[in-house]
Amino acid sequence: MENLMENLMEKRSINERVLITVTGTWAPSHAKNWMECEMTWVSKLREKGFDVVYLVSNPHLDKPYERVGNFFFVNCKDDLDSIYLKNHYYVSQYVNNDTDYDYRFHTDSDTFIHPERFVDLLEEYVDENPKDWVGCTIPYPGFNTWTLNKCEILPGNWNNISYFASGGSGFLLSNKAMQILVDELDYDSYINKTNQEPWGSDKLWACDLIAGHFLYKNGINLWHDSRILFESKYHPVMADPHGVGRPFVGDRDSFMTVQHYCNGHMREIMEMLYGKDWDKTKIYHGHDR
Image (cartoon, rainbow, N blue to C red; front, side):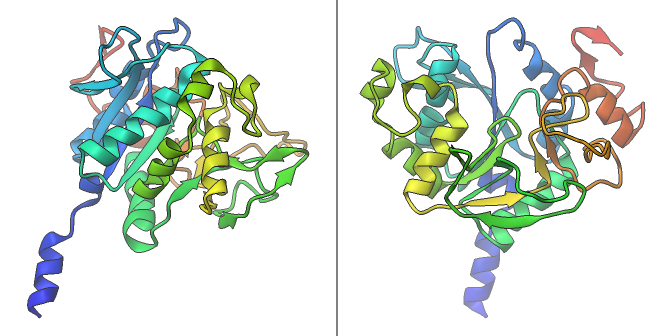
């Protein structure tokens, strides 16, 4: 009984175990995306006690990385060929060496996360049925996107494309997985674009494919969950010959939890979910609502 009580007292809440990271950029086309996230779904996650950090490049740093408030600055260029360093290499070192987090959920700043459903998803894969790598597989398996599907994706190839989790929509990584993403990278060959990995030096921009290669190489298979999706009605990716559409995170009765390509529509989605008066105190893009 005494040991049981100690275990219960030591059990940490989900927001103490998972760090949320969001890709940021100085590129004019996406520079304001993080603001839209911050004023909508991120603010809800912060209310629930989650730590949400924006990953931003700063090649003038005198150290590999530095966290300042809600920003995590990385000593690399703000370009696609350096994105693995920003999204995985340095922040994984930070999580494993400088924090007590057990997991990291990484997503892009044009993705919308449903706050309440997201907590359920995290609790399932962190507490109830722990996994090292959870996301939405590319290529998408032959499932109906309108049904909730969960399955392990074994390593393999489809039309010479290796399976991997979409980084745009996002994926969950354990400490073990993050350490692999650090240890497996040959930093010098990556920087000099001379690497001999199967993904080649012409795909340095595909940080999710690179991460997938390293994880599969080390025996960690992807766990696919259809609550995470790399497309939306605003930006369809997959063919839809029958016109059935795709599930939408803004529907109140949907299971969709993490949906890519929602930038420019996040306030609209929040109003769908919580009503037009969901937060009158917020300032949105510099203007009172």
